[in-house]
Length: 186
Length: 186
Image 1 (tube, rainbow over the protein chains, first blue to last red):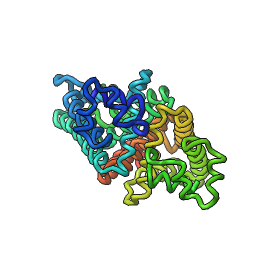
Image 2: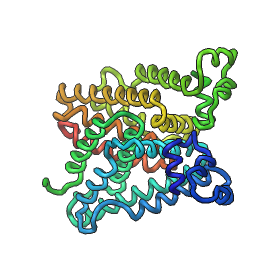
Image 3: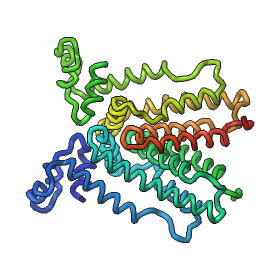
Image 4: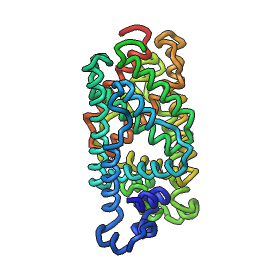
């Protein structure tokens, strides 16, 4: 998985070959060829293992109230980055999403991973509604909009020169959350 | 440009060769090879001509008030589509954005095209603030958030099975616009 991460980050999807992943692989390359028929099959496994890791890695303490947890997550994922390697890797993920039109396995993966994150966001919003931190809103719809903003911000951060724009997105998103969700002004 | 559109839609970026664009090209292929050194150079020209077209093609009548114009644009671009060809083409555009990490010409193009659309959205919002349709808001920040939602929705619509989610995004976005922008409840 480490080898795939590095190869994807450095070459992107279009420039990737199983050979290039092999070049990053400390063990025998024949192991790779034995396990996988081609780069797409390996990449689907890579995406799944990344999703498994992210599932246990959502920011926020159990003691946070719903608003704190939500803003921690959003500030974590909607961030301009000066880290060129991280940007390259995110751009490669964008490229992989673009394969969904021609590859049902990628399409299926991204449908499930989006659903996973949307469901987690909806859980937090429902918790906030139940304990009175938030107004009564449709948690599914708010979560759908938030995930769309997260996906859009990831796209913009990795494929354009856009530091200032992302700061504006965060500012306006906080306005939205306060006005739409908070039961009382803090 | 028509030949490039069809080849990109059918093969995606990773599967595209200048030969495949040539196959869609009714005139002599040597014309293509004469003009372009490779597929990336041709694709940058293609993206620029698409942007030129979109610049004259923004939905809305001059007689619309700012709120009508804004909601027309958002409903037009944030839409689930059953049209597999349109989805494939949009996914190929996503793939092209993913090239931005390795290709400054793509990066430059998407930075400019995002800025163009953000500026148009900000113009509409400023008009609404000036004529009293909207509250006094920071037009740049609202436009930045709206463009992020548009980009995210395009990503989701073309790379996942997500009809229901996009309807939820639209519903919640209308809530946001009403609550944040409208000076009076309609």
